[in-house]
Image 1 (cartoon, rainbow, N blue to C red):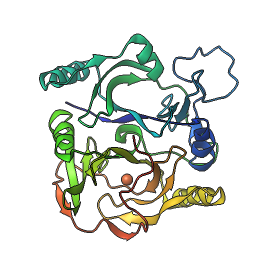
Image 2 (cartoon, rainbow, N blue to C red):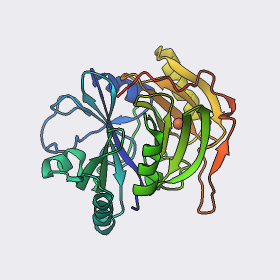
Image 3 (cartoon, rainbow, N blue to C red):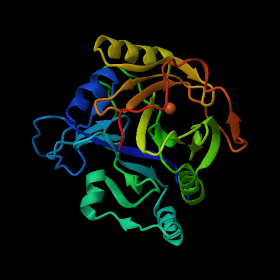
Image 4 (cartoon, helix red, strand yellow):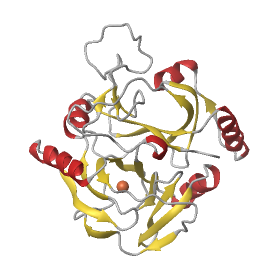
Length: 307
Ligand SMILES: [Fe+2]
C-alpha cells in the first residue's frame, strides 16, 4: 500500500494536561486553537483541551498532529498513517483484508474526532492500533508559543516513532510486506535483539521498530526543527524546567540527526533533532555497526512508557 507519511500520533497516560505545559513551553508546539470535532463558534475555557480531557497539539497548518489522551498508564494509543486520496485508501484497505487483517472502518464520530475525511483501523502484530486516513483538516498557520520557527513536516510527516515489540520478525513482515515501508538500515544489538529503521517517504525513517525483550513499548517520538540552534534552545528550556534529559546531545550514524532525548509526561522519550537525512529511490538497505557519530550518551533501549 502507498502510505505517504506518519500523519498523526495519539498517546495516552495519566494527566494529559501535563502535556500542555511540556509540549508548548518546552518543545514549542502550539495548543490546537480548534479541537477536532469541536464547534468553531463554541466558547472554550482552555485552548487545546477537549471535553474528555484530551490535549491536542499543533505543529504546522494541520489542525493537530499529536494528541494526549487520559489513561491509567502511559503509552501509545494509535498511529495515523496518511494516504494520498480515496483510490489509494480503498486499495490499501483491500490489500489489508487480502492479507487477513481485520479492517474496521472509522465511524463518522471517530473520523470527526481525528479531523479527517475517512479513516480505517487494524492492529499490528504487537497489538498497536494502526489507523489509515485521508484528507486531514488544515485550519490555521502554526505559531509557536515559544519561538520555534517551524517543525519539519509536510511530505515528510510529523516525525518518527520508535516502537519495541516482542516479535520483531512479525513486525517487520507487517510493516514491510503489508504496509509497504522500505528498510533504510538496521543494527543488531545482541542475540535476538535489533533495531530496524523503516521509511515511507524521503525521511530516513518514519518508524524504528526493534526488539530488546519479550515486551512491547513506545520508546520515543522524534520531532524535527530546522537547525541546531532551535534544538539547543529546546534543550535549554528543558534543562531550566528540570525535565530529565535521558540522552545527551549527539549525532546518529544512520539518519545523521543531531538530537537529544528527554522524558515526556507519560514516561516515554521525546527526541528533538535537526539535520535528519533525506534518502532517494537509489538508497539501499545497510547493516550498521556504530549507532552514533558522536555523543548520545545514555541512549539505551530501556523505556519508561510501556504500552
Ligand atoms: Fe529517533
